[in-house]
Structures are given as C-alpha cells and as structure tokens.
Image (tube, rainbow, N blue to C red; front, side, top):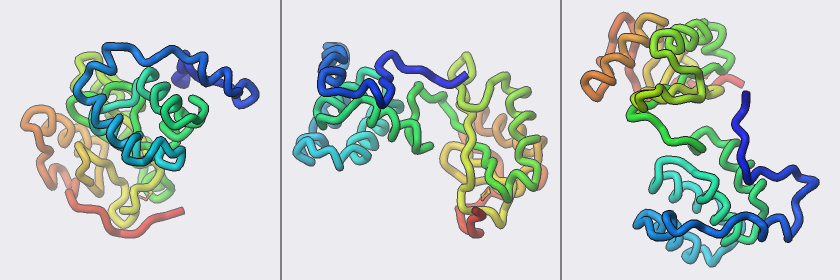
Length: 205
Ligand code: FES
C-alpha cells in the first residue's frame, strides 16, 4: 500500500485556497535549529518556485527526511501547491518521506540487475531483516529501498550500502554485507563475491 499524506491534494483539488488551508507551520518545527537552514535557502532563492529541488535538498539534509509539515511549509513559502512539493519529493529517490534507519540499503531493480536476479536479493534481504522495501526496520537500524538503475550496470546486480556501491551481489553476499555494516559501521568488501566499487560501468535503459 502506498504512503498517503494528510496534506495530499488531487490535481483537481488544487486551488489557491487549498494551499492556504494547510495548517500553519508548527512551533516545534520553527524552533528547531535545523529549520533555519531551510529558511536561509528559501530566502537565498527569494522564495522562487524554481528553487524547490534545492530547498528540498537542504531540508532533506538537515532533517534526514521530509515531513508533511516541512513540505507544507516549503509549499507556502514558495507559493506553490503542496501536491507539487509532494510530487517532486516522491519522484526522486534521494528524498525520503519517513525517517531513515541508521543504515540504508538500496537494491537496484533496473533491467541489467533484474536479469541478474536482483529480485532474489531483495526478497532475501526482506526476509532476513524483516523489513519490506521502502520501509525501515522496527528498531530503526536499517532502511531498505529500491531504485531503477544506478548507472553501474556492468557490475550488476548492484546495491548501495550507506551511499557506497557494491556490485556483483548474491543474496548471501548481500546479507553478509548488510550485517557487517550493522556490526562495524562499514560493509566488508568482497564478501562472498561482492565487489565494492564506486559507480561506473554504464547504464541500461
Ligand atoms: S540496472 Fe542496475 S545498475 Fe543499471
């Protein structure tokens, strides 16, 4: 089931009134020191709507995820519909609408990786760590997600652990790498055939 937002508006519902009807920015948010970084960026771009992605980047970096309240605030400041902010935030994989776990694992499900059975890797990780793709484990230790092509197709199947690419994964090596990440803070390279490397290798459609 997809995530729903209490602020989500259907395109047919978008009116100037619908924007202003979203709740005002809560004090808990405006009093948060991280909020100032977002405000500075909005002012730096003079509240221009075309600064949306830059503002969301700063918000994501500051808070670790984009809450409904934060997105609603950005919508009001940039004078754009909440649905536009929500649409951008859900389109790009680097934005998260929920708090991320201490570690992140992204499994590529693009064509080259799919052919090399990345779906089996994903299922194995879901079973081993008891978390569905797109979700975070109950203890907040791991967020598991998917992406369609990382641009490293030559190393398929590929996953990314805490921002670092691991190629030629198998279901077993993926589990070993994630466990190593959780235990030591960094995955061990070359575990059971997994090759850790930085990008490259081309991209499949
Ligand atoms: S399809 Fe997985 S890296 Fe391109």
